Length: 410
Image 1 (tube, helix red, strand yellow):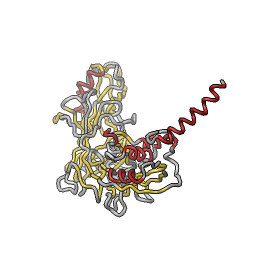
Image 2 (cartoon, rainbow, N blue to C red):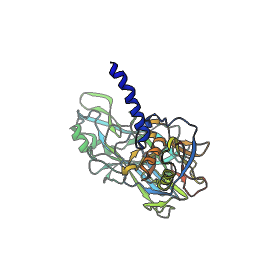
Image 3 (tube, rainbow, N blue to C red):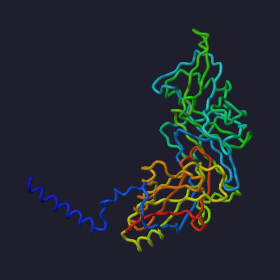
């Protein structure tokens, strides 16, 4: 015990000397609290390059929220969102025998989440529900540009429905042509294969607009009202799954003809950066020159606090997306979430008082300084699969540019 009590202070001293002389030591980095403001020196990192880039291979399979509808504007042209979904039994390990039932009616119920572009407006949407010509596969991954053919002779619904802020659910009474699709004696897998699935969309025969749907709601289903022809005359109901707990995906079809962006794969963002959901445009931004210059002047800087400030352009839409998230290209690992966002869970939200989005990037900025450069950061809308709201961000050449504000010491 006496030898250990003498040796321990010596080991602690050696460790302290090592960490104070070794420039690459990570000792102490984890005690920096990115949520705390510190007194220190202030510095601004301005991006040397910024682009708006197409996001045309977005995976859309099996998300809890989706969107259907049509919308167009001068900046992004037009977009149509279409839902493809299986019809399935409520018990995937069970079976069904509908050979001896008389179907009275079939109702497809959809649970509304949001309306766009005006949440308070009542829209006269034209719904179209058709059967797929081939089965939607549970083991397949579908992207925003995926598509399945439809059975043109199986149109189950084709009519206008009023949808406004006071309506939480939309009930579509399908016509009797769907009855043979559901009248099966089959296992769960056989039923899904035979039924093939549905394509649900809003056509341009009704009002222009976008309807976000909550597919995780239990009320989202396909309900059959029926009577047993041999044993019971009392009407019963059977809730098939449609969207909820089934395989599904959303297709986004863009037409950028005559628009400001013209559908280019990348657009210079020195003045304006475009954030468009539904497999539209993300932002790619680089602080490489600013990082290298700062490291040259302050090689031993410790970042105590850093924010990525994203001022909204003056000509942006009045309805703003709720949140911007950031993905790191640091160390050439494209698609790595910035750790500050994950740990805080509250950043990237729109601040209406200051008209900007704010994202804490303390640890991320320290990583860039230690790496000595920036391979790029991708900014995208958190709700880009289910919300049509888009926005514009000021580019690095504007008077109020996108930038990183940091507090450091050395």
